Length: 143
Image (cartoon, rainbow, N blue to C red; front, side, top):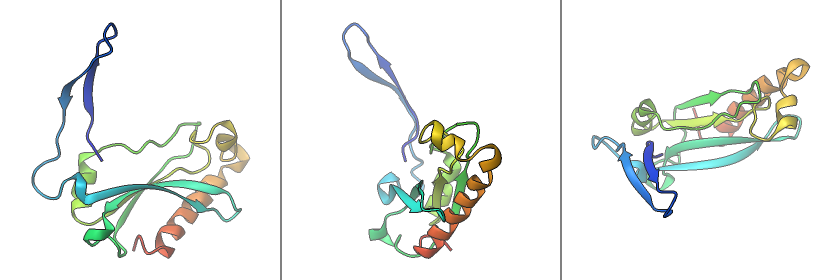
């Protein structure tokens, strides 16, 4: 939930200094009003697939279904890494959920995970996404 910061590391002493830090805009709720959670959902073939979500905290009205933007990428063994994007802040402040589905074909769980979603198994990446969407709807997270 935090924007990127730049640090300087002094190798001789081990000291770390903050050089630059981007801040959240003061126009609206800050990062303390949101929660980040990594869960696993069960795909139709029984495999546990990771899903990362950022959403309004449940204690401040985040416990009901909300619009949801889902990012997905499962190819070439590359991991889908949740990152800070200003456009996400705009959606979060409007009550949206941002989710990242770490489907098979990516690199999140090594070579076997990648192989399970490539070539003749590519359809598995799409099925994992469909199951992620079903999970978000069934749990009352997304509308």
